Length: 226
Image (cartoon, rainbow, N blue to C red; front, side, top):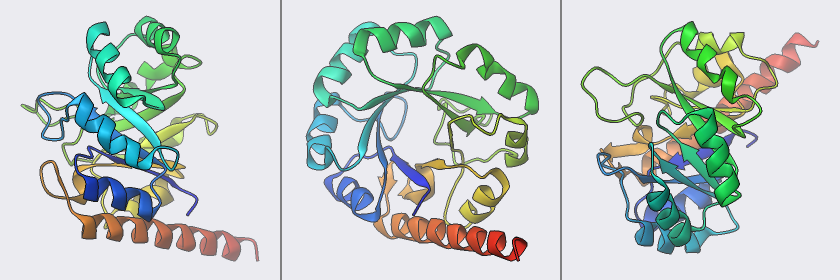
């Protein structure tokens, strides 16, 4: 499997172990009290120790203050930080300098203009994550199970390092990869049986769907080259 998969919102031993066994490149722990996937830093740290060195450990925060980040980084020792709020380029630079960790900066997308917001962050954020804009009334910046028009990403520089997120599941990942050519994807609600409850069977089905999509795309490329 060439596509990097990040399973986000992990909260249990079973889900963490299964994610890594299936081939997850990244495991995400969410620190945002309004989220059903919120986890306490110490609990996340204990889960992370089970898989350290086998998948990158990502701490996901939303406009977190310095004290909160200190606590999270101390308890989790993450490999990366994901900033999923309205953090400015200056804030991203500060976070990188203080913690010495690479940063994924998330952006919500609904229309082409939303992608222009990344420009001040290019060369600052180590990777971007494109999620769908939350539905009206939602308190969650991500994990809402909604998609956006993936065709918008065709306007990006082909060399831009990003993760595709937002409403992905086993049924639509093939189309998403074919349209975007994304090299990394992030999934949370798409492998859940209820908000915040990871479903091990759905996780397996998602990874199987990624493998099938990769095979289909490789076959299509081979056909085009004949």
